[in-house]
Length: 129
Image (cartoon, rainbow, N blue to C red; front, side, top):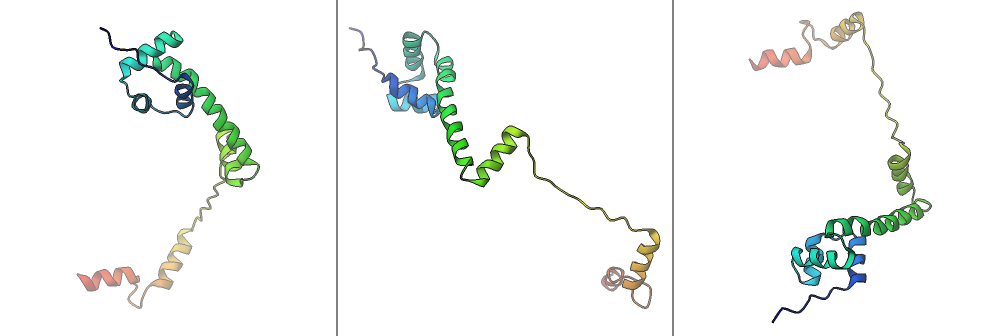
């Protein structure tokens, strides 16, 4: 006598795909292995699990995107994030580089040096050694 056919709740399966549950998680919920899940997908949809999953998860992505757009109207952080993701916006980073002439460098070194003409760093190195 053959084992009874495993029953799956198709609506629950599609909802799990929409929230991007893994194959392992789906198998855990339905108490089956990946072979059984693939066989059921083939019987029900005419496709393997990976193909069905790819199709069914799109609804979840669309729903998430809709929620993000709604949040952007109320949440500046979300609006900034979406701007970076979809509009190519970036944070403006400014850098200023100061160029010191040799003459200025010498004046600074002279100002910072002690009476022997050594900078504080050079003096401490001499006292250590």
